[in-house]
Length: 417
Image (cartoon, rainbow, N blue to C red):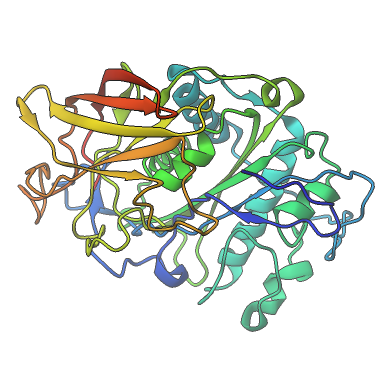
């Protein structure tokens, strides 16, 4: 699945980073402007509103360097920068805990903190913070540190936190010890406005952004790589350029995970899923992802979201075929319609986003559910019902030989809008 390359010509394979930010770098949403009083997304009835930007996703990379002696292809950073790097370590730990718990709850190894990855993630988070503190980009991919012509003074090597043009260069420049194994990078960004200046804690926002990453199919794949064993995360806050610091606050999360010799050589037998048995507190809805998991269906996720997807993977098999799927609301005794996403009906077949033949997603179609509990869309579609138990069952044909049955229950958290 991942091609090894020399470090000079390291090819970045497009993969799964979630970048949460206001459209076009703005703190206002182009779509609905939900008011929330907590990261569960519940509407506030108070006069003071806390508004968050609508999520946008962009796709990142997996880098797999081999030759540690090679030099970075270009863009060697100035390591003598006197500007101190910021990091909220408790918020970073909150995100790490979400990712590690999701993995260990569902049969994968957890993630240990790696200080080398921490340093890489923290510096890149500060690079992004510096850009949005000092400019309002019209075009910016948070995964890269290239110079952008209309904001050249705060991008590329002019940014005091520049550490490499892309993840590959950042790993090389840091001489990261596990870079011969696959390394992933996930980025999330959110901007909040509060008329009273009352903001959520950075730890709570980081936890929310982590859960959002776990609800987006293509990003979920990245977070649940069986080979990952260590993690490093940076979380920073900032005041968006041109905005009043008393009422506006931005949050950036950068999380890198890597394989190790132990985890890369470990063989995982059987099927694993996320969510899995007894997982609790998932989001209820997915409103946006790039790549779009419902591409070609005519569905606009921003107005017609789907519920928390179910990821299915069997690393020991070459091919699986999922069938006879049931997605049942236990409390209301109703079945939720689903769409199966696998290699046969993959809208990205033949691209870097193509699903392997041993993986699949179950996408709950929640159009008929009246799950929005408050606000202007009360009684509308906000994905699955909040704080509700769902039973998922399916058959899985392994390598065209063996038919197995799988079944589990999970519970959503509060409705997210």
